[in-house]
Every structure is written in structure tokens, then in C-alpha cells.
Image 1 (tube, rainbow, N blue to C red):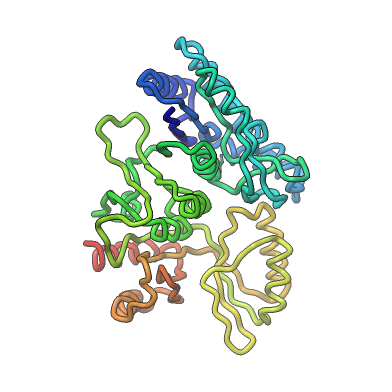
Image 2: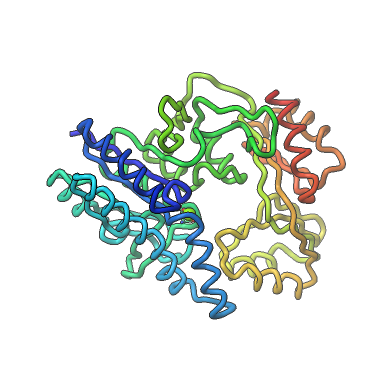
Length: 381
Ligand code: ASP
Ligand code: MG
């Protein structure tokens, strides 16, 4: 029996009307025959709002309690969607991450899935019910509720697709797939028909928001093809993320990550790592020369961002907000001519760094769009 896993993002379920619309899309699909598992994100900006609430109670909310709080967002969506489907005459049943058998490690706020035991989902599917699952959450081996890192509902969908041996894993959002750059920033950005796991994983890590990086990593390891599509768009083509797309390219896209912290410090790597480890933060674009370090920090999965920044500044680091602009391509770092051209056109923009699958520049926010546009025109125009 065919199983399809679908995931609907926060903007697709942001209001009761939108939830009802998703319910009717789900029902329509169900009536075509497959067994359906539908993963949902929290409605609209719910997760951000819950985080803000926590910060109004204490400057440093414990990550365990944050996870208890944040998982409520997806529970609201799952219950409402299940009700809305019921009202359309199909039987649905909702499950939390832990009820779905999603077992994670104990790294609260950015937990990794280590196993999925979907017995209850199978039972419900066998009873011909539409299964709704709260995304972004699981239960640790110590039986604590965990979240999977921001944007983690995608990971839930991919993990369930793997565990249920699903025919397809469809990730729906408000854009029709992955574009070569954010069309709101870069003129001429185009939808990409098919991408490799490496390209997409790097693109997601570089700040492209359509798919979550950890979800793509999971898909690569489990061999799950992801279809990213726009909710309710008939005839939309979306993007396929798979092992070896037919059409290969040197450069896949340009991504801009805003709100990064750009840091210079006179610190040894050892001292730096101790400080970052305490917050489970990972540096990006790190360079270290003679007791000086420079790097960028993406603080999306560090709820104590302000405290970490204060610690760094106390240790004499200079920190400012900025953007990381990345030019992503499989093995681009080993293609000397491409690296040379990218570096040349980024001259004067900020610190330029080369990695295996992307080259990047840490720049002022004001300079990010222009560099993104320039790289896109030069390499993808
Ligand atoms: N609601 C969570 C977030 O905003 C998870 C998700 O949307 O995938 O990060
Ligand atoms: Mg969300």
C-alpha cells in the first residue's frame, strides 16, 4: 500500500481559513487512494511568539522548558487540522512527536533524531485514517520532550518518510520549490528543477529557507527524494532533491543569511571553543592567524544568543551584526577559476572564505543584496 508523507509549513497553516484549505487539499489527495501522513508546522509566527513569551519571564529560559513550550505550537496545528479534516467527512487522528515514536538525543532545542518507531502511525493508517503529526519534535532516550532545531518540521517529514518507506515526501510552503536566489532580493532568480543532496544541504546551511539543512542531510543518508512545492498550486512544478539529478551545474545558487554575528577576537582557538561549546554554537567561515580569530555565528538555534554575545565581548571580542552571502556549487571550492572569479567580484565586500561546496563573504547587511545580485548575474545570469 502506498504511503505519502506531506508537510505543510507555518505560512500554509497560519490562519483557520488556511488550515481549512490545507484540510481540503489533504482530503482530495486521500480520495485518490494513498495512505497519508501529514506533518504540520506551528501556525504562522507562533514559535517566535512563544520564544518571546519565554524571554519575558526570564533572560535565560532552560532549554528543557523551552522545548516543552515550543512543542505546543505544532500541537495546536495538528489538532486543528485533524478537526478540519473530520469536518470534511474523512477520519483523521493527530499525534505528537513522541506518540509518533520519534526518538531523539538529549540535545534540547536542536535534538537529532536517532530512531523512529511508528507503531501507532501504522495502526492508524491500517484503520484507514489520515495521520496528522506535529512536526519539529520528539522524545529523548531519557523520555524528555525535545525540539529538532528551527525549521525542524521538514526533518520530521523526512524521518517519517524513511521509517514508513513512503513513496514520496512532499514539503509544501508558500513558494514553488527552491530558487537560485531569493527572488525578493535577486532579480532573475529561477526555480531549480532538480538539485543534489549536497547542493541543497549546503544551500540550506547558507540560509536558503525553503528546506531545512538537517532534513536534507537525513534524506541523503536515507535516500529519500524530497519534493518541495507550493501549497495548493495546481500545475506547480517545484523542486526535486535527489542523489544525482540529470542536469549538473557548477554553481547552483546564491544564498544570503541575515542576522549573523560577525566576530573578530584575540583569542586562541582553544579558548574560543570552550566558550562556544557551552552554548552548543558552531562558528562559520572561521579563520585563525597568530592568536587572532574571525568567524560568523548563526544564532538561530542558540536561545541564549544575547548571553553568548556578552561573554564574547567580555573576552575582548568585537561583534557586529551582518550577513553571510554564499555562492553554492558542488565541489566549487576545488574549482580554482570559479573561486578566483568569485573572489574578484567580491573585492572590498568583506572577508572572503572558501569551503568545499560554497564560497562565502561576511559583509555588512547593507552590502549583502548587491553582492548576491552581482554573483547571481555573473554565475547564474
Ligand atoms: N515551528 C518551528 C519553527 O518555526 C518548526 C518549523 O516551522 O519547521 O522553527
Ligand atoms: Mg515555523
